[in-house]
Length: 241
Image (cartoon, rainbow, N blue to C red; front, top):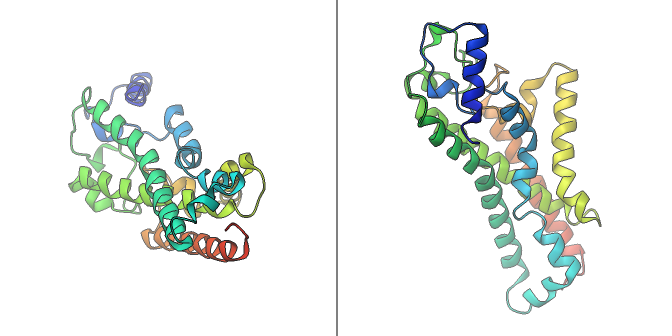
C-alpha cells in the first residue's frame, strides 16, 4: 500500500500523455505527489496519527488516579518532563515512519533520477523552502523536510497534552488538535493565506509557494511554549497529588 501513490502518479501521466523526462522517485512517492487522494488523506490525518500513540496518556493518568501513585515515586517535575519528551518523540515518529516506508518502497519501483526544473514535472520552485537543495541534493531536502515534519507533529502531541487539563472528555482531548488543524486550514483557504496553514507546512511538495522556514519554526515554537505554559500553570493549580 505504501507504493500506491507512485502507481497513481504514473496513471495520471498516462492519462495526460507521457512526459519526455522519465518518472523519478522524487515526483512519484507520497511526498512528491500531494495531489493524489492517498497523499491528501495522509496530510489531513496527520494530527490524528501524531496524537494517537501517546497524547491521551496524561488525561488517562489523571482521571484514573494512577498519577497519584507515580508521584509517590518520582517528582511532579520529572513526571511532566518525561511526559512532554515522550509525547514529542512519539508524535514525530508516528508521522514520519509512514513517509520513510513509502519512500523506500517506492524506490523499489521508480529510479531516483535527480529533479530537473526545466521539465515542469516537479512542484518545487524558486519560492519554495530549500529549493536549491531540492534540485542539487534531493535526499538532503527530504531529510530536512522530514525533520521539520517530525518537529511539527511532536508539537501537535504536546499541544494535546495541554488540552488534557482543559476538557473533561477523552474524545475531545484526542480530537482537539485535529479540529484546530482543519479549522485553521479552512480559514487560511478562505482568505487566500494558505502559506500560514499547518496543513501546507506538512506538504513536502509545497504547492503553496512562499512559505518561510522562519515563520514555520516561529509558529511551532510559539505553540510549543504556550503548551508548556499551560501544562505548568494547570499542573500547579490542579490537585493531582
